[in-house]
Length: 495
Image (cartoon, rainbow, N blue to C red; front, top):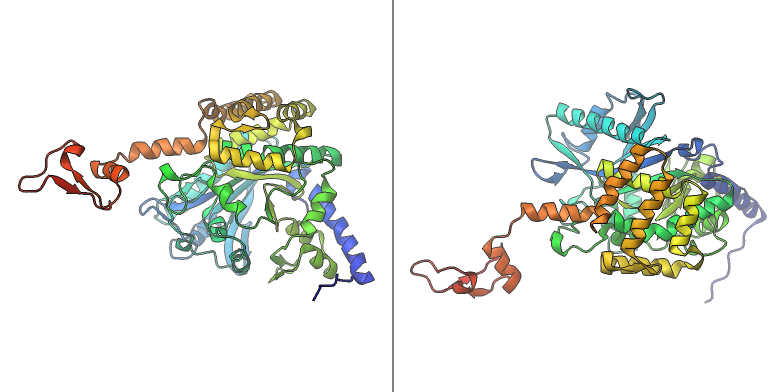
């Protein structure tokens, strides 16, 4: 039997239109509840990292006598006014850091991901040096809290947790919203639990410019550059415990791409003409929010309902509308800030170098125009961006994107961004990261090089690579003699 179109009542239509106006104000930064980064010309950085026990090389769970919850409880001594509690569980701390030599404090907020990843958000601030200092100060507070517990924990910045062989190794933080997310996303893709529990990223949050046409221009540039930015910040060498040498490039983006294509990846039409706030809001209406948290703090499942259906049936406050904007996870997102979500978790200075790249590229009309001319933005559509993703994953530095070698585009983008940065210290941060690209390295290549130097292969391991596990190999092919009394063959066993 054919399905009939749902008929709205007059009341529902009027409520939908009011909610659309509220949502538009929130995503463009005009709402009082929009991201604080829109209140200044500064930006924010959110750096996710895994909490790893150095003694055991295991991920520290949320619960337990020395779990992440206990670390947060110790941190709360330093941030007594900023404890973040959800469902009765301490899941974060927040506060302001006024550092020596700086006139303005920097806001910091540390919260937990589904797998107890620690996400540290700093800013907004005009100076990247101020954000860098704030991260260092918070990290010192974290390590002092860990020391007070008598533990030796590290904050590990990689795109995929290198210490797990399965997402089942990670016990989620026991929150109702995590249960609802897991229940929904487990039906949408093979890597849902990996994405939620085992990945970590670097998120940049930049002010949304006015007028709306300039905001749309920023969005389109960032959506076009998303594949290259993901490639240049690739920092993953394992997927479910895989051998680093055989782990493909851009693992984290691959995982998220396969979680829920309707809510992740690229917003349809983002690289075409006419895209802007209205198109983004209409796309959002057609997605499923999975869950919703009211102003009263009640979280409930929205099932198969779309955001549009929710907006028909419920009057949204400004705060609720802002939370609804965060129910989707595209590479480039509007939440009152312009969020760039494609980068892996990076070491602190590299994360700030990446922020310098983005800040420089979007600095002014001259840098915008230079980027647009470099990639031929007028001729780029969604298909060209999809092709860039595929080429970079398969060919790396040998790929051609938007008509040019990837190496050339990366080199010229770094030069454009450097010209857009007025501060010498910010140019140095960018240069530290760009020096990797000059030798055709991305952060993951440094990890691989370090791993290789620490894992010199034995004769047995090299033989396994050549002949396979369980093979029987003549000793003379291995350049040695058999032990006395044994045959001239050696069984290669699983190492």
